[in-house]
Length: 122
Image (cartoon, rainbow, N blue to C red):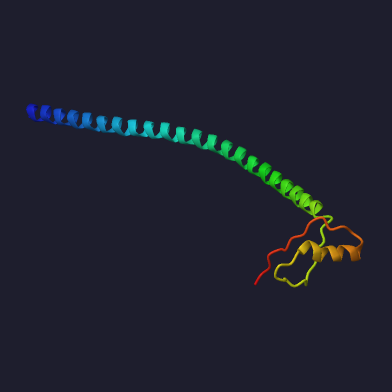
């Protein structure tokens, strides 16, 4: 009976050591996961800050593009402020467009500096 008790004690100690090792392994895994989670939280916070800065930059650039578009439109309109569009003049073979529109300029009492035909949809 004494040996049986000693055998049981040995077996309990062995199982206790195995349980302790298992708990240590689980604890190490838990600690590693905590560290990884903290690292991910830090990275996420940094990414949020970066994202906010990028969003501000995008908003600033959108405003700048809008401003530039308005300026370009205004400059385009100003560059055309002395243009006259004449429609309905048929295309003639060998025509001298400056002579044709020069007659229009004479009728309007305005000199015609240059002329061009704009492409039209067929």
